[in-house]
Length: 483
Image 1 (tube, rainbow, N blue to C red):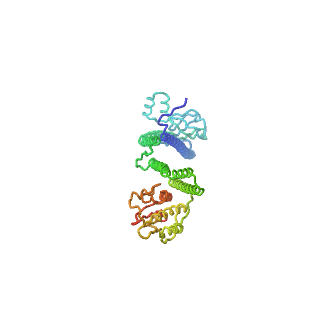
Image 2 (image 1 turned 90 degrees about the vertical axis):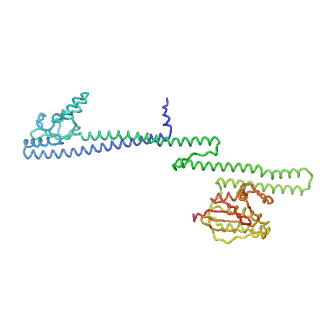
């Protein structure tokens, strides 16, 4: 049967917290054991050096005065506070002098360093220690309370007497006990701290994740106006929610644009399609000459070409508004683009009786797409020529390129009737929108919409401003050199 985890451990935050705690605990244990073993080795080395110094000192005393002097020095040093272990025994191992009352069997039978710590009992054990020993619950505890562990160097003198100099191992053992208690305390505090942190921080994070999940379920259920909650803390949850909210707003805008395109196609393209069908039906209904059929076909082809242009413009606007274009970006000289468009539309302006002029300008280079910018400028200039033809006085269209602060402004200004109402100016850039005064002019109502999409694609904007009289359409590019 598979092992089932508690519900709290099914969350990523709890799993990460548990893994981090486990990793920290393992690292702490390894570090403590390493430091403990290193400290014990250092203490053992220091103990051996101390014992060697003591043995050399006792050896000099023995050489200086023989056995009586050695016995006197051993007794003297045995009585000093914190003294090492000193023991002088006969050839049979009977203790003659020193501060050791009893030894673990077999210690005096070997010569040199003891291979492991051995237990012993000192002379003058305090009454308090004896009482603790007698009050112990069992023999094992009494033995542990009565005895001490030590390391020693065992030597045989020339007269075969035995000299033992050692050091009590209580200090390393106390160090080990202190380290172990400290480790247990640190692990306990770490566990308690982890629980406290989870209670105050982890639970809040889980609540925020639950709130985000609930909002996501509502959005997936069809409520595209819903947004993920934010707290204003500016942390990673808020940044994630803000980015997802921006994405949802973008999706909502694209869906709204798709809906508008569908509605516009259904309403605005129905009329030319109906006109093509009626023309074809009327042509087939009667007997006509070959020239009549040819004229009807030519009119149908012209109407179809206009529909194709309209569909291409719609597709281009949709791609640009979605932020996608297969066109490449490169350096574009706006002054040169203005000269090309003005040169292209000068014959049309002359035929319409409109004065088309461009103010001289220095070279202005931006990072963009020349074809898209040229198409947008062409649409604006074409509209300006059409709607300035009925101006009072001399019809005039002026193209101007200038830098203003951190912006590059390319304006096309006419002196026609313009668009006095601010709401109408805002609606003029929508798809298929044609105001009342423009109904008499040919067009599909996509020129300014395409220009606005091109400017949005380039990180700029399209402004429609009153010119008193007339209208000024301004293509505003960001000036990255001055921003």
